[in-house]
Length: 265
Image (cartoon, rainbow, N blue to C red):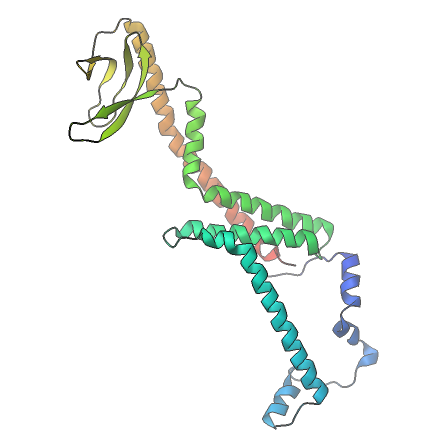
């Protein structure tokens, strides 16, 4: 895809052309001479032949340089104000998040500019703003890859009881948590984590968590079946989260391919 022209708002187009002296000068009546060559050949010829430009030409050039320099300075200061938050959160060890934040920040300010100063037709300007906003939302999700899995897992956890973990404290210091358990009678039904995990009805015996005879084996079996389904759905959530992420990346690439060269005014 190449850069293309955009449909201009008729009112803004008239205003722009009326205030542009260079466009007004390009009329058949104002032609002073014509030749085949490059636009700035005459300036280069003066440099090569050491011919001095007229005083007016030199003054106009200095005025243009001063105005351009002053405008660049204002824009630099304005950019520092706009970008300071994003710059504070750029970390060299988090390359992908930095690139995404830069894209988000730039598109955010582009949308504000397009809304306020856009010269395109209303329909075209609305389309550009819509696609840019959608891209910002996609970038925000892609910037937080863990959220894809967290969101899917939260959907599953809301369907099941709040399982508890076994907290183990060690003699040489430190502690850890493992497994999923739910209360039954004076004990707990659940599944341990790690290698060769145990599952069933557990009670604390002399401070240790051990398998014991269930007061109601049918209820224990039901709770274990529910827990196995919970783990099965958790495992499936990873694939679903990966699908969500891939879908967002595909949409982002589509938006960039179809619209990146349209986000200008």
